[in-house]
Image (cartoon, rainbow, N blue to C red; front, top):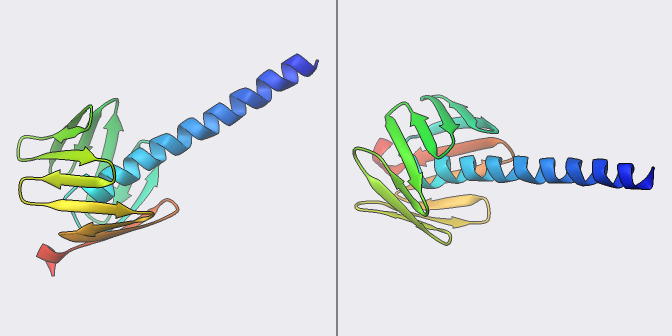
Length: 124
């Protein structure tokens, strides 16, 4: 009985950690890679915001402005490429640096739980 309980507890812990990783990855994409403004709410592989929805399927992100594919540490779309180096997201004409739950660069994004507040300097 102890073995079955231990297996069940381990499975629940692994599922919660895997869910956190997916949410963190979506938050990092919206905060560091995606070039939009507004408020988004994330839930697993989906982010719904004031400018539309972002859906992650495997390594592909479907956004209102196009499709991005993640290849190792790079996010590639038809219009731009962003490379992640640690907590920095660097593109041809943009960069974002992540410090805890805040992304700062050409825009500012603040992550609070499953909500992302993002304001681009270009949209002001």
